[in-house]
Image 1 (tube, rainbow, N blue to C red):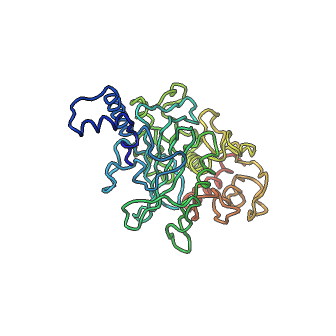
Image 2: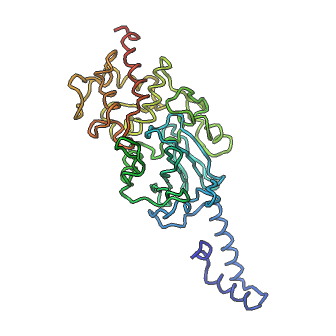
Image 3: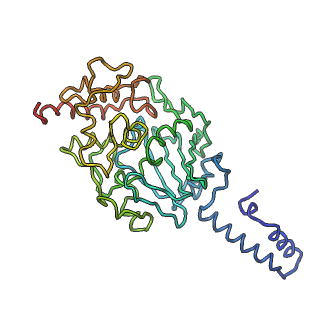
Length: 372
């Protein structure tokens, strides 16, 4: 059954039968039905309704609305590209991202740290390795107010992607040395996305700031795609009058510190923030615009570890031990891929060597800068 067929009323079917039999006269009911059909077609054309059942994602990526021409993989122009300036490390994956707001839909940005999206909002994130599309992740805000999560695995010929198993797939792409990029299961997606006040990550006030941090780790694409100024100019967001700034930046004492704080914001802040389930730890790694500058540093530098993780060295008693990267617990966890120790705990099997080097240098210089 096609989308239009699904909208056809009994009166509409009657009017069609009359027309096919040669009658040029439409009943009033038939005219109303025709109008309803037209309205239904417009709704579907504008992307206001999903053809799939609630909590059931489409079987193919091409059925989610990402492409205007699925055969040629031409992205629908209504899907707006964006790039967070502090991206999540995913084992060197190249990523492309898009958002589509429903026609007439407006984001409520009154809470600068937790935006609210209109029903029907859709997100896509495509992962590529060595020039090959491997997976595309999909989020859709359903009519019941809940986010739908799905991951699609690309076919070897790159023509389309099929819905991955609900449990995910652990060996989606070989990264070398016996390591594989894995496609997350639905439960894995929720672990990260439901760890804070907003389920959408990477599309936020700081991440889309027009004051792009050119030095951000892995942020080469951070200047690409839409920014806050685009959303404001096109009436796609409201409540921005309450923000401290329309071009927010991370307040830091040095460029090196800003580099580290930006990385922690994008890779750790979704779980470690003042409004998440881990707030009781008192370690806030997300740059929340409503908090005082320096709050992230104050929760990690010189602060004792509350509980050591398996594999953590006995002398790593501080989250960040100024001047001593080798005994800083945060760095040990960032540098490990031992499952019980590594951070982030999901979505990566390779250590981010560039980030480790940057954080190591920053910690080593803290002692001098703080006069210890």
